[in-house]
Length: 203
Image 1 (cartoon, rainbow, N blue to C red):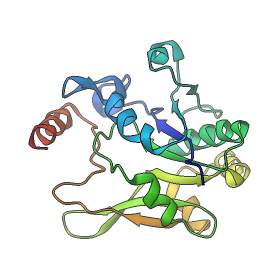
Image 2 (image 1 turned 30 degrees about the vertical axis):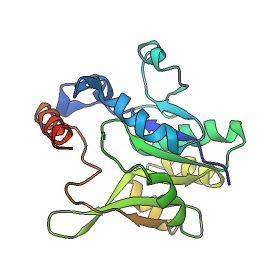
Image 3 (image 1 turned 180 degrees about the vertical axis):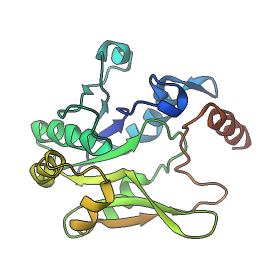
Image 4 (image 1 turned 90 degrees about the vertical axis):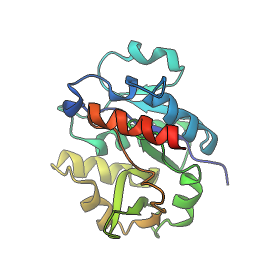
């Protein structure tokens, strides 16, 4: 079975970072999104970036830039939908998504998501928090193209919370270890950049 295409979700407004593209912030001497591309590309059959605004700022990556098809920044699910529409045009049956602000996610993400998929083909990544409670990371998922029209209808109807939709479709769950730190750590603030750089040095 061929690897699904991957979509990097970079459509957020980065309000806690002061706006702009979080993925273009420098961490460890490289842009955040460079770390994400390095991890996701070997796992996928092609990559695209979901981002809004002028795509020229991302032209240097040489990847398709997919804007949300719905107005007013409806959230990550709109990026998933843009990715599913792109994948459908390629003849792919599913996509894998990863967030543009997460430089440490697992190098076996795609294989584990595929192994954990529910009957619908959906699967979300998860990891234990510091209390041991398993937390889902809904921007990291395996999404079947067959559900794209259902997702579009849900978004048009006002749905914004990812797990409400994925739970309704019996999504599976792939749980990853959080030791020595959560691999889904994401950079939301300037302080998080310093944390990420410390983690990179330690690694």
